[in-house]
Image (cartoon, rainbow, N blue to C red; front, side):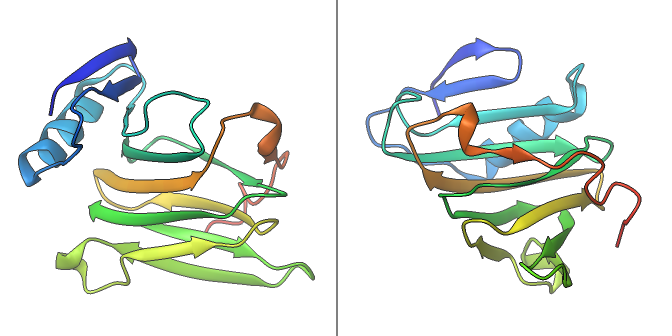
Length: 155
């Protein structure tokens, strides 16, 4: 896959027809393991203003994914390598634990999270690679971070 580097954590795919192979997934996982921050993504959409965003994301185990929700947007995750455990919180505070993983784990590998549902995850493999999809265009106002949201409430 041909890419353009936006910064050390963000690449954009350049191919007109965007595909990715198992080798691309392994390459992305390796880059996350070697990177200073432990995270990297390849944006499969063209630009932040696109109406649909898909990203291949790789994160090392120690990367923290802060509790958050998106008031107006759903998002989905499909695990391609490794595993993680989502903590999802309903409107009345009930907590659902959802382990996800690649095909080798025997876990579910996909989740679609409804708009407004608070969520966070903990990575329980050395590295995880997933496909994340959501509606664009990108706006930082579309994500509400929950201070101390579940950090002490690990699954």
